[in-house]
Image (cartoon, rainbow, N blue to C red):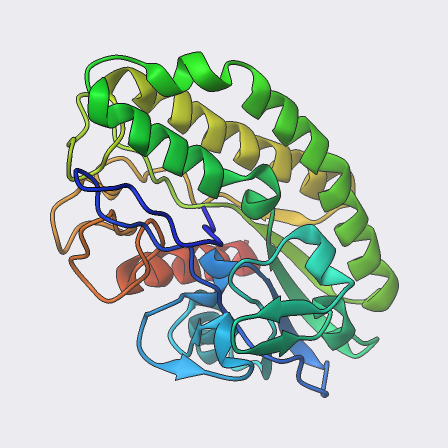
Length: 282
């Protein structure tokens, strides 16, 4: 989920990058506008596109694939590391500044996709903490003990921020169809595949539950304003970080295809694009 800082897990665990993504707000604002974080941008998936380079947007991310399928003019302003605040304020990356993402919207915009919330939740911090804790207790549940119900409270705190973003979209693009795109399933079922994916066996259900809660909140916020929620989590078991190369939709710590660690790979982006397109046809 959107890791926005580099994650170091020490000798036993390889570094997990929380890379940035996409580019500068294009001026047109018509057609299809894609908003979001690194799960939208597609860092390290060939080929890099747009500015600022620090957003690390791919020209094979799901917005690009969807636009090609439906024949829409795309304005992709997603950016790795983005939080809800970056929808209305400039986002500084290591290689330039991404303008406020909502600036890309106009009354001519007809389609908007939004993928946001994971960085607000602090999934980077959670993933690092759980990975480090698993080194000394791979069969236990150290992360569950550390965070308890704090993640649930964080998700609840993110909900009004997502609601505010959706309200801002509606004000700026009142005639657009709005899709809220959820997060692909990251966490495998038991017993996991430690240490390749450094999550203690007892923490698998806890972290998976955190992601499900986040997706559920996004679905609720979408329904509240008449937007369409695109469920990309469903059916992800067996395509998660522990899946074999060629079947996984998200990469783990040890990369098996070009993508950022703990992020969608090109197969994952194709799957998200398929689901977004299906939602448009429904």
